[in-house]
Length: 151
Image (cartoon, rainbow, N blue to C red; front, side, top):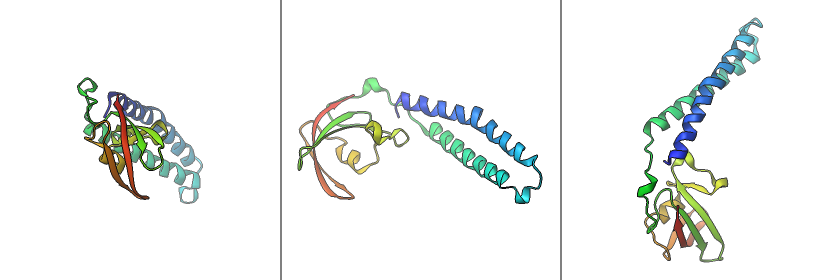
């Protein structure tokens, strides 16, 4: 993963542990003070939120523990690889698109970042400018021509 993506995950984990966790604990204590817990929907909701938060914290910790930061200075643009920005053209309809291939935890289609494990990224890896990649996607087979590779 990129160093930027790693820093975002670490910051998100910090916020979850130092802001969200104490807030949920406060909500649980407040609901507990209201009396009978067997019929207290507020208490049940706070406990469920706590469980979801702890699950998210544990997932983030696992991702951070397994993360390998890629040295961007060693990346090349002679063929498609992770962290490359790839300009593509759909051979069939001429539509152009640009994607950056990133780790699964950094993927965000709105920002043009696709996971390295997606069919499109898998079909592009190792290809060079001018190559046409025939990629099987859920809608069928698409042909994408690689127009440019950059950072």
